[in-house]
Image (cartoon, rainbow, N blue to C red; front, side, top):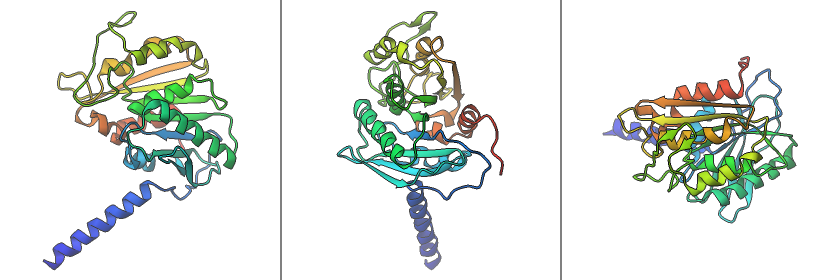
Length: 273
């Protein structure tokens, strides 16, 4: 009985330490890279520190700041932007049901707060699920701080409900685009001219590979439908489909293949140890 208590107590402590660490900056890594373009990691609806927390530990980055957007929209920064290696900023929202329009306001306030710590001329954005809608909204808003590179994971670009389980939309894709479109898709079509010509964009979709053609929440065709709007308007558009059980919607950010795709796309030169 005592050993069960000891093991259980140890597991609880390990969980608590992991949970705490995922929501706070990491110790700076000693790497020989000077990078003044911070990369912001933006979760989707119901996203938590777990959405990108473990991925940030696996990627060749220095998570210098955790930016918390409070319920009232104000921003609290844990840590300080100092640059040096590949710099990461983990964005968290206290309101887990925040929608893209409100999330966009939060992202802009995070960037403004970061600029007060250390100015920068451009950013990279990595996002998951509905956060992909938000990061594209930011990208086409002609912001003062433009997006250099964009990585979107399982974003529902042509869904009637944004990544809501049980309502998977997967309309066929033809030579000219989706057979049917939603207001979200049409909004982006109307703003395609606002995409930066210099933008580098990696779009990742998941396929459970069980004949469903979706990741459990977002259809492959919904995620990839954005190609018809992006590929002729940005410097580079690339897409990847991850297949298998670990391509599930909530597991894409825990997939080592995705880690490699993200790292290679954003930082093609390997970091030195």
